[in-house]
Length: 388
Image 1 (cartoon, one colour):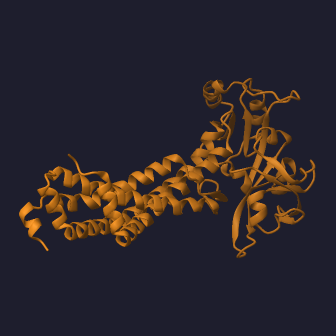
Image 2: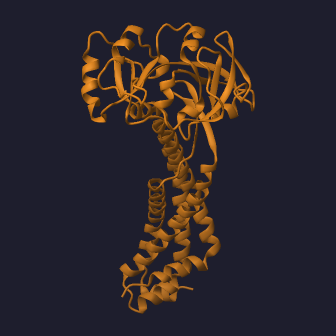
């Protein structure tokens, strides 16, 4: 007969102070581990949600982002006539030829400068992005020096609030509206009339072309035909894939940084768990001898202490996850390494991060408890009963 699981629960409860201190140390490691995963998930979710699987982005070949891209007007006219492009309710193609440039603005807090994306749009731009809705004010009038700002930009940068004025492209631009783009990268952008932007920045070419597919399964055939056309120098990507590629470099850096920090902290947590379990064995030598005298086998003693270590690790995991869950209330900003612009996003907790964090905490408890458990199971009955 095996030792009941309640035995392990009671031992942890009996040593409440030691249990809390050790679990807190493990919880700190799990907090770092989960927060790193949440940071990476939040970044990727923000960028991936920016795109739509039905939309296609056309950029100059070898361009990593819209900021670095340029599509000639004659090529844009040729691409505009492709049969794969969906037609809108008004009978016009759901296609937008846009301009994307970077400007430098100062933050409201700290007066620190940062790059912000300026996007020159057309009426079709909004139809291609149904997640974007006007929250305050109105849309810019065509042919005017008016812009609308994403909610995140409006809140964090000087001159981007409703009714304020921005200076860029050697002109003054009045903010006539604030738009809500949800948890997407568009919230960190400023939009205005494309033709006015091209004149202000003296740009003769478009940065990118975005259109909606008439049939989403036709993408591969369209991509192969367009990229092999000698008249064109463009590359086609699904919008979701384009923004996923944008996040890859930063996400990889965060994963490596999180791994290094987690490994360093987890070594200390495992050592703490090992010391705790060794102390538990040393304080319960007589108890272990009694269990052996009652007929419990070595493997039962081993299992009981391993279960105790696992429970200790899971307690730490739950504490760490509980603390990490509050990080979802925080919005942070960082530089998008692909476009060199500032991007605001939030920590994101999902089921995958929860089970990975709990598994990680259980592994820490197991590693820290294996050696003490083996020591407990190898105690001789006579020597254990004679111990005081």
